[in-house]
Length: 225
Ligand SMILES: Nc1nc2c(ncn2[C@@H]2O[C@H](COP(=O)(O)OP(=O)(O)OP(=O)(O)O)[C@@H](O)[C@H]2O)c(=O)[nH]1
Ligand SMILES: [Mg+2]
Image (cartoon, rainbow, N blue to C red; front, side, top):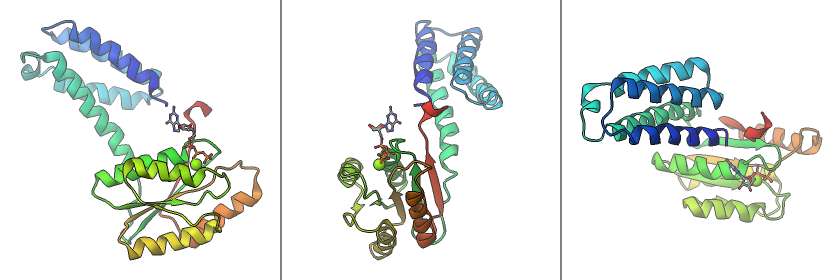
């Protein structure tokens, strides 16, 4: 969500580039100025944006690119690749433990996107050749288990659930299940909660104490600011 405006602005910069046909170094620099502005407006760190632009510009004004038949296409491809590398290195920070399974616990306020992001993470790991398991620890919202199953179904990742059982118990059994069935990443989708909800916060603590997650991800709505 944070990058919604970014993609529109990048598209605009690229459109101008595409309309040019043959490109000069100045055209590329002009486009990169717009890309840089777009990144800064999307709250990308100043230094990150500067390094990003320097690296893309260096690659993009190479003679091979400018003299190719579709220079604009080339430049866009470079921006894409570099952006992916930039975002990719961000994700690599997830702590993959040496013991199996790696346990990831999703936490956050109600409706912040935990369930959606659990599915995205599962897909991300699946693409890396891993075998994730989604776990329905949200027993409070009636449709939560069903929702996780839909999410899991879309990315073809199994969902472990025990209905309305104790989330601590569900987490523990899910980890045992993962060990038995060779699932190397366990993603715990917990119930959304308000920080003032002491009972639910205590439950998170208990789940944490029980399964000792390798990573606890706090999911936030980008609009929170
Ligand atoms: N635009 C946008 N919508 C999102 C994103 N992630 C989730 N949503 C939507 O936000 C709503 C809540 O997402 P969920 O994944 O169910 O959030 P949750 O944290 O699991 O919610 P609870 O389990 O009720 O606490 C859904 O309607 C999602 O479709 C996102 O990255 N962008
Ligand atoms: Mg949810």
